[in-house]
Every structure is written in C-alpha cells, then in structure tokens.
Image 1 (cartoon, helix red, strand yellow):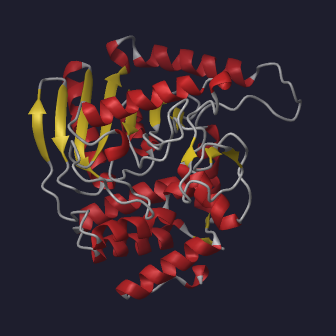
Image 2: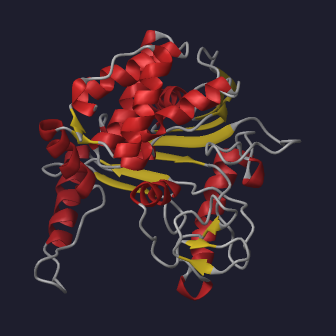
Length: 361
C-alpha cells in the first residue's frame, strides 16, 4: 500500500495535536517522521508514531515542554528538554548550535531530559542548509550487549555526520553503532523473516537468526558482530555516543536510558534525566572557502563513484545516496506502508477520531 507524502503528513500532524502538542510542534514532529519515510528509513518513520502516543499515555512524554538552556558558553550549551518529544527538542538544540557556529565557527549542544528524536540525519542536515557540517547522535533503549557480554547495557546509539557538496547531494553518514538497528528487527518481525546471523544473541548468549530474540530477552550485537570481526570497535563507538549524549549532558546512560520499545520499562534509581542527545555544527568557511571545499568534495565523490568494481553491476555507494534517491522516488510515487504499520495507524485514527486517507485502508 502507498500513501502520498501530503496525506501521511496531515494525518501524523493531527495525531501529534491530539496528544496536546501545539500546532507548530506537531508540524515539526510530523516533518521529522516523514523525513524518515521519504528517505526509505521505514523503521523510524510513522511506524514509530504509536510509540510516541504510548509514551504520552504512560506519562513519560510532555507535549508542551518548557525547553531551557541549563548551562552555556559561547560555543557550547546544555539543554533541558523537559520530557518533550525528541522530534522537537533536538531541532531546537540544533538551531542553538547553528547560531553559535554562525558567530564563533562551531556550536555544540548536549541535551538531557528528552525522548526518541527520530533519524539523526534530520538534525545533522539542518547544518548543511547553511554550508556547515552537521553532527547528531543519541543514546537509546538498552538493547545492545558490549563485547564479551550477553547483558543489554547500551542502545543502538546512532551517529550522523552530514557534509555539504556542490553538484552532488550531501554526503550523509547516518548509522547505528550496533550490528543492525533495532528497527530492522522490527521490520523482519513484521515480515516474519529471519535476520542475518551476527545481528543478535539469545538470552543465553548464543548467535541466532530469530527476529524475536531481543524481545524474548536476548540482545543486539555491537557493530562488527563478534570480537574477531571488530565488535570491540562498535562497542567503543557506542560508548562514545552514550558518554557524549548521556554522561556529558546529565541524561541517563547505559542500562538506565528510558526505553522507547514497549517491552521494556525504565529502571528505578535513574542517575540522570530522560534520554540524551548531542548535536553540533561547524562552518566550512572556518577551515577553507566554501566554494573551494565543494569543488573538492565533488571530486572526492566522483573518484569514489568511479572506483574499480568487483561486480560490474554494482558500483560504490556514497553515504546518503540511497536515501536521496528514495526521497525523490517517494515524493513522486508515494510512501509504501507495511500492513502492520497501516493497522497501527488505523488504531490511532480510531483512538483520536482522525479520518484516514482512503489510500491506506
């Protein structure tokens, strides 16, 4: 099934308004989710909409937060999100980082007391619009076991860098620091297909291809899968995200990060406040003229795209290229929705009395 961007955006906007979000915040939150669906990241788009509603119903999400700067220097700040939607809090923080970068060359904001912020690329790409390099990361539901353990202590902890280009789309490095994002397991669950070996462990620490292993008490593996394939590097990257997002900001970290997934509950005696993010922006012209940089980033892209191929049918894929292509295709042809996602949207429509577009029924 497919739905147009406009239809899905309007429906999502109304759902956020129904839980008490001001109109502007509801529109922004819908924009963040739609950006994921448009870019082909189906795990982080409207498939997550019911999750935000669930947090609101459980009293864990404040639809009208009083976002405030808790600490500040000319180039840095710590933001308290007042339990608001991460979809709203993170763009607010990125705007602060951008203003600092405009004045001083770079800006960095740590965020605490927030919630799930959608795809990291949305926030990092805000910098690209101003010829800056964007940076965004967040800690997340504790589903990942560190190397040599089967205990869930870290999140998928994504990190994103976004670089402006000239004749090409931006280079966007947006990735989980786990072997696979939890959303990919959710997609496999909806499709009832096995996951690749190396993504997850059973509760007793054995490799598995069962997409339900993590919900049954197992764990995701760090990027690299196992020690011999570099999982210690994925663990280190995830730890970096957790420290910058959680420890530095005053948010929770490690196993205390309040989970977004429905099958986990927050731990008692949390050391921090909410989920944490970390965003930043750097002016390209703080290092070299923008036009000069773009000539060379274009040359960099061209050279890699022309790399000698192992398979004549498959060339090097520049980071962010598939998402850019998906966005242009889906804007024209509509956004595909899996059957279970449609069911969740129908349930939300029924709950709040919002009419669903006929195309998704």
